[in-house]
Structures are given as structure tokens and as C-alpha cells.
Length: 535
Image (cartoon, rainbow, N blue to C red; front, side):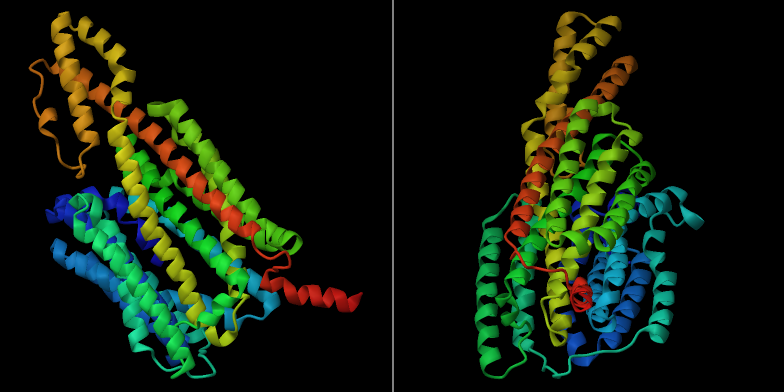
């Protein structure tokens, strides 16, 4: 439910905007509210589970998430939907960190690999499945509810999860009964919000000075948090995060690489959706069904990495996964610029499978390795850190890559016009227009494409695009040319942005190489010891 809800809204944006009469800024907040509140609550949610019981917090989070999903589905105004999304994200922040912590303390080492492989496969698939399911639900228009089923689908799932967890799940908490660190919670939440909020809003508002002030204040809040946590550990005890966790080199390097990995994929999920729908003009259902192949690849990669590759190759599996992911990005970008507006769904299957497999190969062993570096009593806090790294990475990836993508799209807008100018001029001549009229129409067409590429709100039609030709035939020619030019621009900007994603994956790989030579994946330690005893 959690990862599905990060992406499912994206494909329903036009339907939500039309039904609720929402401004584009409100649509952005419907998407951002969830990520902001989720990222802010995650670390605190993990510690609350350590203190009050992980099963209790999980049940509370699922119940709150289900109720908030119902409120989202019944929302009658943009403000109500935004508020419900804030609550939904906060409840996810209570629910999600309990999962890895419960896996960590419930399963014996020799069984933990299977649980983490299932968790990683589902997690890796859910973001892509969100696109598919969202597209189908919007297209089907169940009970004439339009976009609302994308939230209401969580209600039966949440109720089933509540019933199953209440019966099956074992409760656990930290044996040392840590006390709640209120000041640490406030500083951690402040640091996250002060960073993510300006990155989310900056581009739309034109980067006013206060956005940079907030980013600087985020760094100051993080510094104050670290100083306070160190002081609390020496005096009162029970810090929100035990900074001694970072004395483990594998944990520190792995967590840093994990953050960079999710920054890369946060950006990928954004530009991938934009390319298919805004660039190629695909329907939500077609874009969603195409994305299933990424989910299939993620499931394959997660299963194979834990069951077959990790026991034999250890940390080198992570390096291989990062390289496969970078290769998938390179292949996808190359095919996009080769096919441009003719890029078909079946031609995306192979690069999506490759990228998904690389994603799955990295996610499952990295989770296992990071959890293997911490004691059981810190399972909740470490799980919260792991999930915070993931969500903060997604949020930063969306914000940073959005800036990069739209900036390049604006800068390179002439490319698409140049690619269609010859064919458009030929068609205008065939329609009987003289040369001078052709040049004037092409000049106006160029201005329209440029202004639309630079528009912050994609739903706004620039003034240069609002004057329709008197001849309907000319209008049809320009409509086709505009669609082709737009696809060309998006294809090349997509490839350009994926090059930056490849750079991030290279940094991730360097982080994995920097792991100590003897770093082992936790679930294989017992098997290795048993083999030594047998020898």
C-alpha cells in the first residue's frame, strides 16, 4: 500500500485536476504531501516501535493509513485531499519501519533471507505496479467514481492486513526500554522538512531566496540533531538514533550508497512517467501496463540475488546490480533517442527488464547487509533510518531530477522543431500555402513549442499556442507536428537525464567497492559457520 501510493497518483493527475477543479500547485501538493509527512515521521516511527511495541505501532499505522485512504477517496475539495494525504503519509511513517524490524527480530538468520527477498520483491514491484493499477482504475472508471478508486482500493487491503497481522504477527520491542527523545524527534523532523519542502516547491516558485535559507537551515538542524544525540547518549541515554551505529563502516557506507541509489530511482520514476505520458502521449493504462515489465524484472532480481548470488559472491552482488542498473539506463536512453516518437511498448520491454533486474539485485542484499550490522535492540531505529534513506532519496530524486529534466527540456526545445520542420513545410506546401505563409506559420510553431517546453505548469496553454489557424487542414498538420516535436524533445531530454542517473549508479557502485573486503550478508553467516564446523 505504501509504495503503491507513492506513484499511483501520478497517472490520475488529469482526472483529479478536472474533477476537483484543482490548481496545478495543489496537484503538486497532493503528490508531495504524502512524501513529506512520510519522510518526516519515519525515524520517529521506528523508535516508537522499539519503545511501545512494533506490532502495536504497525496495527496503528495500518488502521490510520486505511482511514486516511478512505478520506482521500471521499475528498470533495483539493484542500481535503491534501490534508488526507498528509495523514496518509504520517501513518505510513508509523507502519513501514516496523516491517523490517519485525523481520529482523522474528526470523532466524537462516530464514531471514527468504523474508527479505519477498519484502524486496514486493517493494521493488510496488512502485511500478502503482503506475499500472492507477492507469487501469482510472481507465475503467469503476462505479463512475473516476480517480477515487486509486485510494479506495487501500480500504479492503488495509482491513485484510489488519486482520492478518492481529492474528499472525508476534509483538516485539527493545529489551532495554528506551525513553522517548522528544527534542531529537523535533530536530529530525525539522531537518527533513526544511530540506524537502524547498526542493519540492522551488522550481514552481522560481527559487525565491527563502528556499535557499530553508536548505541552509536544514543543514543547521541536522548539525544540532547530531550534537544533541551525542550529548543525550552520554547523559540521559535513549537517543532517537544511536550514533554508534555509524561506527560500523559497512553500515555507514551502505546507508550512503542506499540513499544515492534511491535518489537515482526517484528521478527515474518521475521522468519515465513523464516520457510515456507527456512525451509520447500514451494513455495512463498503456503507460501503466508497459511499466509491469519493470516490476517483473525487480521480482526476478530480488529472488535470484538472495537465493543464488549473494551466498556465493557477497558484496560483489551489489556492485553487479549497480552496473546492471546503469546498463539498463543507458540502453533505455539510447533506444528512446533512436525511436523518438515511434517508441513502442514492446520496444521498452528489454530495457525495463534489465533495469528492474538490476534494481532487485541491489535492494534485497543491501537491506540484509545493513540490518546485519546492528543489534536487535536497535532494529526499529535502524529500520527507520533505512526507510528514511529510501523515502528521502525518492523525494530528493524527484525534486533534483525534475529541475534537471525541465531545465534541459526548455534549453533543447528547438531540437524537436528542427526534426519536423522539413516534413511540416512539405505538408504546408501541399495544402497550397505560399512560401512566406509557411515561414510565418513555422516561426509561430517554433515559439509555441519553446514556450510550452518552458512552462512550469504543463496544463497551461501559452499565449503563443492559443491562436488557431483559419484553415482546419493546417491545424491538423501543426497538431501532428507538435506531437512529434514534443516526443523528440522528451526522448532526448529523457536520455540526457538518464546519463545523470548512470553517474549516480556509478557512485553507488564505488560505495559498494569501498565496503570492507570481509563484509558478509547477514543471513549467510550461520551457513558459513556450519560449513566450517562440518569441515
